[in-house]
Length: 110
Length: 122
Image (cartoon, rainbow over all chains, first blue to last red; front, side, top):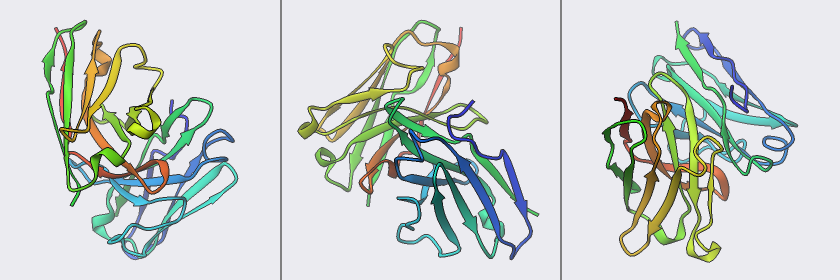
C-alpha cells in the first residue's frame, strides 16, 4: 500500500489527452513539491516533471503537472505511442522523514 | 552528462550481506545528496534511503522497511556512494538504483543508474 495513491492503469488513443492523479496528505503533497517520473519498459526511471509543474530540458510540452492541496496531476496531451510507460509521482513526507512514491500508473496507448 | 554506474549486486542467501557501489561522474558529486531506490520485478518504485553532503554532516535517512539493516555511505574522494545491505530477506530482492538529488527538492532525481539486481534466495 503506497503512501501516495495513483490509479494502477490509464489508457487513451493517439492524439487524446490523459490525466493521471496522485493523492496524498498534508505531510507529503500538502507541504512539499511533487515530482513525476516516466519509466519506459526495461529502463531506469526518468524525471518528467519537477517542483509540481516544471519540465526538465528535453521533455516535450505535451507533458504538464499541477497540484492543488494534497493532490497532484500529470497531464499528457497529444498522446503518442511512445508515451506508453509507467508513471510515478513522488514527494518528501515530513512525518515519515523520507521520500514516498505513488504505486505507479501503467499508461496504455490503444 | 550525469553518469551513475551501480555494481555489487548478485545472488545471496537470506540473512546474508552485500555492499552495492555507485560510481558517479559528470557532476560535482560532493555537492549532491545521493539516494537509493529499489524496484522489485513487476512492482513500483520504493525509496530506500539517502545521504546528504558534508555540509549536512553526511546525514542519512532510511525507509522504515530497511532501517537498521541498510547503511548508506559515501566517499567524496572516489565520487562513489555505497549501500551496505545486511540481514537480507527474500523481500529485498529487487533492482537497486542510485540517484542524484536535484531541483532543490528532496524527491527530485535527475540522474539514475542502470540499476544492479539483488536476488535473495536459498
